[in-house]
Picture 1 (cartoon, rainbow, N blue to C red):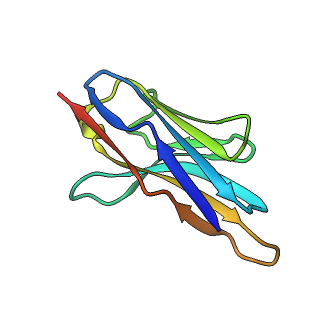
Picture 2: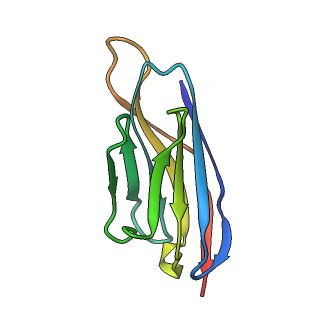
Picture 3: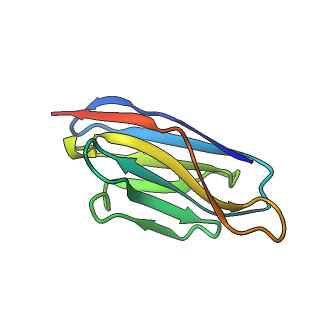
Length: 121
């Protein structure tokens, strides 16, 4: 069992900043990746950014240069620093991880409950 808890969402004006945090807990043998997804009204959920256990990162073209993903000293924590926010960034942001929780098991995905980000113009 893996539980993800997000925090840091809120309402900001265009050009402002937010920092999202996510902490994973549970009996984790191998934590392969952690990342952030978002889903805007009427749109499909999309990858925002992800980071591996060796700190390799990948992010969507729409957020490059504005958003930065990083891990804490405890590798079960991930952050998303969002700068120069735009109204198009408005969405529910979900924390995600890919993990193996016991030997001889397959890699599985786990999701947080989401945190709302609203950017006003």
